[in-house]
Length: 252
Length: 272
Image 1 (tube, each protein chain N blue to C red):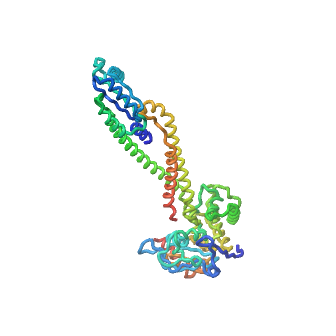
Image 2: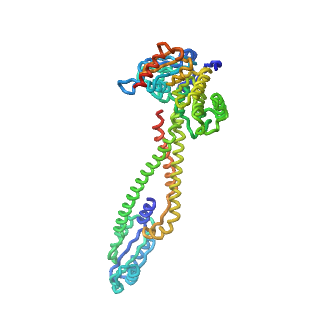
Image 3: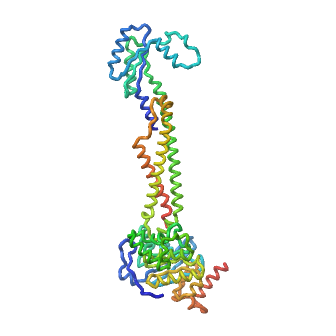
């Protein structure tokens, strides 16, 4: 979830606009347009791509299995590649693109909004899947921890019975079990976080070079507060599980 | 063995409370018209009236299923009376709240047929648990446990693992656990049921020694040979009803009365 969120944020803020220029556009208009663009605070870089450069770049990157070298240069219109500064929202990017269509030299503007929308949907699906899996795992964890504690408490049923018959209060009997459950829950959560950390350290280099190239963001480990929340959550689940499991044996 | 009888002032039902002088002069345990039902039409105990004086030793006897254990469970409040009253030191046990029950039990020592000691604990730990629950200082716990172990004939055996002990020794540990908080009343539910006859006599003698220091003992058993060896008061339960004799079974041999009653009750159960 952390990495999907990071990818979504990065995609949302990595703005890029392509201005396709009219055939035979006045070089002065293009230069003027370029000056206007470079004057905008949201723009970090403007690159002029000629039809020949566009063709060359396409031939380098395309891998469709057919000989495309015969394609004429006219198929590839000249363009201005506008890179926006990091942090520009998608709405702002759309607004800039809308205004640029009014320039004479511009025939068409591509702000990649539809692409980002599709990627958003993809990310939403991935988030839902990750959320569902997290819920499933959490239910399994609660069930496993609950049953483990219940078995541990059941094994010590006789101790509870003896203490109760000697006059121990419920709090006295429950206390050590709750503490033990809390410790076990904390230790389990710590073990899980450490396992995740080991997995992260072993795999993040190879994942970064493949998946990150696709998503545009690097895989990151859980944040400090997430780790704290997981450890505290583990301890709380352990304590509650113990308290509930002991309760059934307190009626002596 | 008869020692000086000591009537201890004891805290009961809540931390720090002590029995008043008038309470000390009354019977320690009174059952008034007590009924206990496990099935609506068939009471396990029906109209039980009983009074036990301070420092008394009484056998509770009767065939299996007669209601001996039920009677004891009503006293240490594992069960609640359905009708009637159970008064311990003048307090109605049936009306105690769940939070008060631990304080009642701190004034009772309970010993069971199956010992109910923890095998993976040491002898010391098994006895000390009765004092640890009242948060007694460790130094005091050590001396009180050592004293209790000495009284039951297990002096110096504290560090031993309980699983290595014989049945008789395990029961002695259970007795030590029951007496270590110096309770006013000890309830023994068939404490000799799992022991050989000579060990049974040893354990009975142990309870008598405890009784000789002023602790009231209710000793439930269906072992006629054991009862016949002593002159203690005999409370017989059959079909949920109580009959009693102020002296032991051997005083009734060959005559009608409690012996006949007990024998016929057992005879009926055996033939059934």
